[in-house]
Image 1 (cartoon, rainbow, N blue to C red):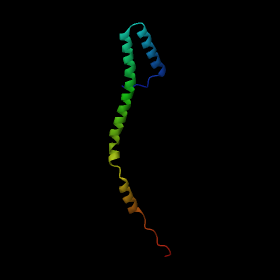
Image 2 (cartoon, rainbow, N blue to C red):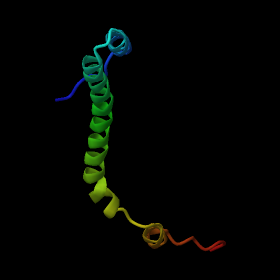
Image 3 (cartoon, rainbow, N blue to C red):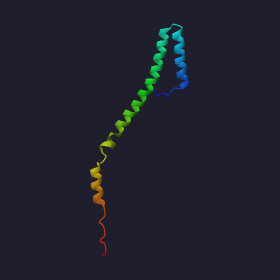
Image 4 (cartoon, rainbow, N blue to C red):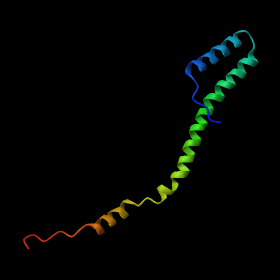
Length: 88
């Protein structure tokens, strides 16, 4: 499941609620809310890593089939027209 980035206000509200719950002494619920905060943060990072991994896999053929600088120089030199003789 792909989620949009959480709204900053929503995350601030979650942290505020967690703090209030903790101050009331319900440490288990505070820990659960902390886990939700962590899950949202790590979930977004994990999604980004998966996108980067997929791109790296998809781009592998492009990178492997890229000619080297030496190959390009040889191709350029082979295609270079001969200079006309001056004064003929």
